[in-house]
Amino acid sequence: MASRTITVDVLARVEGEGALTLVLDGATVVEAKLRLFEPPRLFEAMMHGRACTEAPDISSRICGICPVAYQMSACHAIEDALGVRVGGPLRALRRLMYCGEWIESHVLHMVMLHAPDFLGLPDSIALAQVHPERVRGALAIKKAGNAIVATLGGREIHPVNVRVGGFYRAPRTGELARLLPDLRAALDEAELSLDWLASFEYPELSRDYELVALRHPDEYPMNEGRLVSTRGLDITAREFGDHIREEQVAYTTALHARILARGAYLTGPLARFALNADRLSPRAAAAAARVGLDPTCRNPFRMLLIRGVEVIYALDEAIRLIEGYAPPPAPAVPVAMRAGTGHAITCAPRGILYHRYVVGDDGLVRDAQITPPTSQNQRSIEDDLFALGPMLAALPHDVATRRAEHAIRNHDPCISCSTHFLTLAFERR
Amino acid sequence: MAAATIVGIGQLAAGDDGVGLAVARELAARGFGVRESADASILLELLEAGHRVVLVDAVAGGGPPGAVMQLDPGVLGTGPAPLSSHGIGVAQAIALARTLYGDAAVARLAIVGIAIERPATHTVGLTPAVAAAVGPAAALAAELAAG
Image (cartoon, rainbow over all chains, first blue to last red; front, side, top):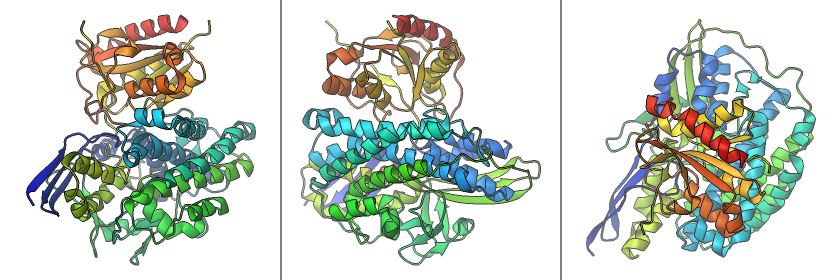
């Protein structure tokens, strides 16, 4: 069998910019290079010398799709450095805000960006022609998620209401209660959406990943927990750097992360579900069982279904949090400056997001480290492509190219949050 | 006729790509109903609900940086836009709105474009030529919003 190269200069339908080179020698992938252009490193430099209380706002600009994750990891890490504890209703509000981001980010990816891959359709426009009711449903679910973020964050992107210690303003009970009808309708819609996704054909692939996720004593993880893995990792956020290292790789601006003792690992929905399925709400657990998911799943293509289950969970959890909400006595706890180093890991929709800050006694940031989920997953994404070699070799070139892109999109890579401009096409007459 | 909702799209950390948001914030300060978004899926929500919308976004390849133009939603390409793949794009959202809600929904949309050379990555702030276009773009968007 001849040697051939699959090249994708610009990956569509992933968050940001990226490119792929895949070289096949017969049925064997001999080279898989995913090139990512990733901005967090420059934001680390931007933090130096800024007040540590500015870190949540600065870091939220890294991503227009998952700003809440960046704000949350920054808040928790700065609070760790300053010895601040946020509990009660303020903690619940943070979790609610994270639910909103999971809902909008997951639904956008599942239906608008990834479902077309499974159906052999070029994009969501073609999907809307074939399944308009599912696209309408997805947009309604996403709107319910957006409304949570806009209500708590003060606006829909780059939320401005989050601060170290809590919020600038806590919502009134009625403001949150107004969200409930749309959230309840979205929950029913999310069940329909999951059943539809379960009707797709899923390529066969089982990978021997080390799966890494947060684990909390009694919650499906979002804002806190220990970092655990399927191979025995069990550490606090403070120990992250002792076990996980990032390395420069020549062909990409993103760093590759690896577990020092063992190498590549995978974070994200597959890992969260494998390590925390027993923490799902009864409704989400029932949905997972209905579509045949169990924690032994190691097929990255089936992550689409896990996202579907996590949307149901996030809607269910958001409703629970709103129904139990009583406004806090103050919108934030007091924050006093002191020197220290703080660490935090929270669960972005795509996987764990680690932040570390060194704060001086003047309250200014001396050093910052931001390790986003996509750089942690990059090596495993490339390993997926190696594992797909025989499948790709048996497919015509254009189908193989689409399948390789499909495999990358399994991980919903948030490559950057760089650009959003229009391309003009003029028809000349 | 009710005033249209202004929608600013862009990315603050991508230099001139943030101009749509800058115009939206200028109009918000003047009392207009404004929404901001990192991707164009917000258009679908507003058009489905029957709103008139004035969208403000940066445009690559539309003339010298800072040129302000009104664009016809019908002439935007629907192919994958180079570099831009964040969520769904404007052209894609318009095509989706047409598919899901019909031509009448798209007829309620006006677009103000501000030409930029290229979105700088990892830069907050506008270049002088594009910053100078915020006022004229806001004026055009306000006129279109008033109907």
